[in-house]
Image (cartoon, rainbow, N blue to C red; front, side, top):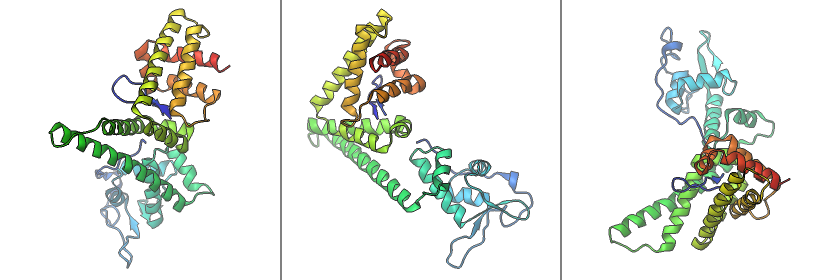
Length: 302
């Protein structure tokens, strides 16, 4: 939600990690004697869809490694049937469930969360796919904007066309959103929800260049006040409390109007300390800066 990431050294904007499909290597531990399942063959229905897959055949089909499928089985996320020889057999239901698992991994859900979603009484597969489609379309639109900006930049550098300053800034903002989604999207979406993150992204994309520069100036002033507060070694001191106030202003520049709360303010500074990626930014200001800001904000919000 409220972290901004641009060039190196800039503060992450506050805001998945998944099993990236990859070519699966054959695992001979479950082959034993050659048979239809061990060799990757599977039975088929009249409509051409296979009714069952061996673990190797499903790995090749999905791009998920055999080891990952074994892990999903071990944690109860994807349990295949067993043949007489105890080999794993994946039917149509298991294939459909694996597809859902991979979709949710792509949007940053943990395996435990996916299990709760798929096995919960309120699970609606159609609605889940519709929500995933919306996110993919939004991601495509951001990517298309960035591609267009890069193409225009290249054309301008080659002297083919002239790129207006406004066009340059639009591409810059799109790149910020993309970088933040890659680096911090999972954690921030889990903490604040998709709606809050999308609203924050929209607020950034709606900024003029002058507004964005004003936010940058607020961030710089916050850093300076934070350093002054650390020199005084007093989180409750005037400089430390000015840093906390400027940090609030900076957050509100990105958060959806009306969503700021003291609890949320305290919570995000706790995240700065707990997550090494966020903490790294503040450690670049001064060693211990993340902890000091957390303590200053705790006083500010008390």
